[in-house]
Image 1: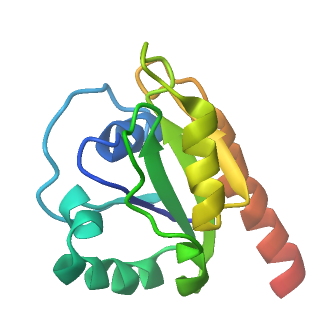
Image 2: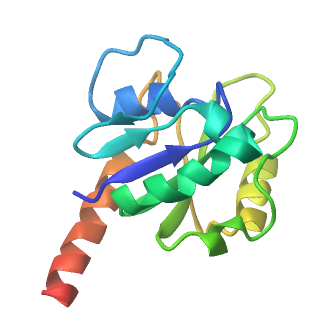
Length: 151
């Protein structure tokens, strides 16, 4: 399975999605540092929110095969500038979290991720597991493609 690094602002749902992807019981805790697991890297939101710390995210992408850019469906704005994915030397996917919230605006979150440069976008409700398997399948699918075409 390809390794996924998750990036997004604090409370975007990175840690909850990490737990869901790993099949763990969901419980909230504040991510204070980078957490490495077999198939996912969970990063603190402050890294994406701070210009000073944001440079570290670029370095951490070298540890992953796929960059996951997260936006909660109820975000009032996007922290990701247009075409930001062009700065990554890895495949970038968009992930819209918290799709079940009453104030969710999924089409707006999709549009922001498209503007950021994401061509593939997933919608997830990590608490209920909705959309999680699609991400896992996508990470597995890409692995077989790499194996077949890159030896």
